[in-house]
Length: 479
Ligand code: NAP
Image 1 (cartoon, rainbow, N blue to C red):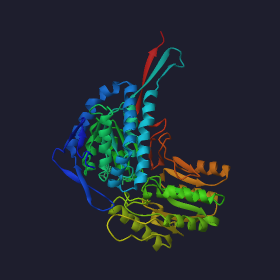
Image 2: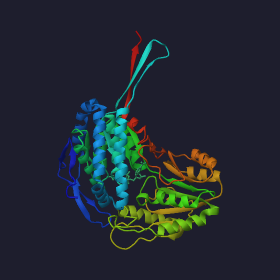
Image 3: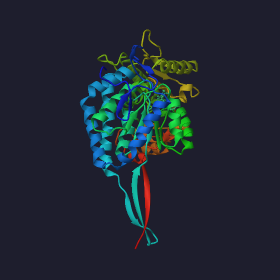
Image 4: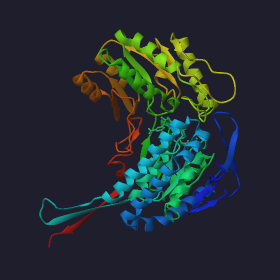
């Protein structure tokens, strides 16, 4: 912690906010203040934008191999410092150390993946159908980008945007979530060490997100917004981006259905449920939010899931043997408490958990609810906590209709041993990703993203870099 930067990173230098403001970073396991970081205002944001705009032209001209090698070096440094970065993440965000180490590996992989993509940006040459003209196609960076990230994956949400932006030749202003600024500042220090030129990445930590970001989006110099966060904030930012016609990528909220058919292998389904529900204490956009279980296996599935959930150890993420850390803050926990109380009032039965423990920290126990009413608020709200809500269904058409009956469409999970049914149901789900007999879909080599109100565009995979590139077409007459 002592070496972690706490200032703004602008033009390659560590600086205080212009007005000297700072903001506290809390440890969600104790409620105590870990440290203070600079709290940027609009003036600082403008300086960060100036630095990104100034660096853009030269950065765009850098050889792809140079950009690739910076990312590769940063990947290696992150892997070498896995332990240090994992401790930092656990301190500011709360997830158990084992999960934090997993996130460090996942986050680093975006840099390795995009170091490989940086040297594969292609173009094209063709004779047009009239035979008189040629088309020369090239791809160029979209320009300075604003990157806005949430607190739930403090390192990976940053590398998933910075990796393709660096590979494409874009400069950036990154605004991390105020709860977890330290991982982003540590990442900026690593990229500097890896050789990223000054001004290419600028980091502004702030408690005044709206004041800091809106002028950048409306000002016309930022050419791209890549946002990960809630749908409500995404909608606001889309409206702000419209004025200067800023290109956008939106990774928004989810409301994932987890469907268990009567022919599912229940061992696989329960294993999958533990991952899809409990990764990151349920604080994930990919978290299973609605468990639809066929009536004939619902009781057995609920019993087994409750047994596994009840055996998890809750405590500070730094303690050995802990499976479930605290939620991010008191507001996050209060929301989970309210959703559970509402479901219980409407007839749900609590199979395990459901009671907030005494004492400091934002802990909430792994909870399984069954006989959940379709009218419960948690059916159309992201729970963002360790609560599995089970409903029953009778036939395939019905469950597909209910699974799709939501404005979101990020991910769905399907458990069945029948190949035809697996493919048929997956194709009918209105989602960007499907976990088929698995509870984990995230992988840097796969295109991550949603449909409907879960977002626009994809991150990762072969297409991840496209979000940061524009086409230019040159018309050349055939002599
Ligand atoms: P959030 O409240 O939408 O905040 C996300 C980021 O946006 C934070 O940095 C936040 O800063 C910033 N922000 C809020 N209002 C803003 C404004 N007016 N202008 C500019 N920036 C603004 O979401 P969260 O609670 O941090 O994260 C949880 C949400 O993220 C969930 O909905 C989850 O599903 C979603 N998520 C989606 C994905 C995906 O890939 N689809 C991945 C992870 C998380 P402040 O906190 O200071 O407002």
